[in-house]
Length: 550
Image (cartoon, rainbow, N blue to C red):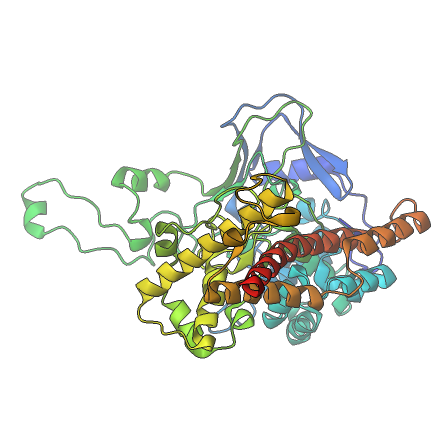
């Protein structure tokens, strides 16, 4: 993860270097329990956590009382006005303001034993590259155009999480930050950006009371797609006081009938809705428990191994770049995505498509995930997603929208949802068969039976019905349009030459760290598009030859 100078913030000038001993002392004072075989060690981004001995699966790694988290509930900063419908973006920005206030207090903050271990250089999350990344950041940001990360940036701008949105929030609330002994002057926007970047890269969503919070020690574990642990917190607390047990703010169910009580019959204590999923024994048990956030070993950890958390399931490099400032190259996540209005500008088609049941498509034997290299993707963990997955396969929902649009534009009658669904499944199988025939011909299989002359697939195998052929052209046009949104020199070969030039000019990578990681990311995304577009172009071209021959 790239960073920029700590001196620019002015927040920790004159403070002693980060101290692991100070952190552990602070954790002990605040009632935290850290497993004895965990060690905080320096790494490229500040500090990480390693195991000093084997740790079996199921072992508790961390228990931290919730009052030891830093949130808008535990800070000394007075509350700021809350919008009528606060969202995650507001909670994130509010926590950044809280963190800035506590950092400005330095040793006077009740959280200083934890704060002093935080990175003092600003993590370079993608929304800040233009503002703080210098020439490297500006060059890298220019390459993001048209990528999935660029689309996420646009979404975040709508939420006020771009630099203009951060500036607006800061200008509105900066006067709320009081002077401190360490920082009697007014806070700077630069220092707020530092606090925001720390929150973006380290905060956890906790519960309805704290919303988002910084969790000491837990935030030192780096991300892995195959993690050893993850943060667990009981989120069914009272949103007014944070109590896990029944409290005065709860509205409980009806009390037992008086006749039953007088007769000494067994009765149960009414449960508030937030605790209704617990048994009475469990509800009684939490009365005596500390409310903590916990981490357990979800698989064994070997001595010497880095202990890793997960920042979320199925995170792709686009989101990692935007929120955490690095790319993992694990090819997790959903690949490239589209909004419905980007795929189809025809309202009637959008209405017909919206009525389709995705589960019914799958149940009707839509060929999603038929085999590796197939044209259509396995069902996603995110129902309804319109995407090209990391294997270059199109989601059922995306193809269904393209096919529905083709039907409406060409004047085909949509008699019923069931008929449309059946036609979509039939078309998908036509395309899978055509793709298989092209691949067999490419590999020289099926001579004389499934192959035409000159290594071309047999005409029968790639001849498509009219609407299926139009749908194939529609998917190809969608992929081609996405290619054109990226920089024209973003072909993998050209990027490889650019990367080679970067490394020749910058041996240790420090001067062009952001540009290097961005070029790698863009090249991978462009390769995915090129491979998928090539597969669909093969089908379209083969079908065109067959139609001409007929």
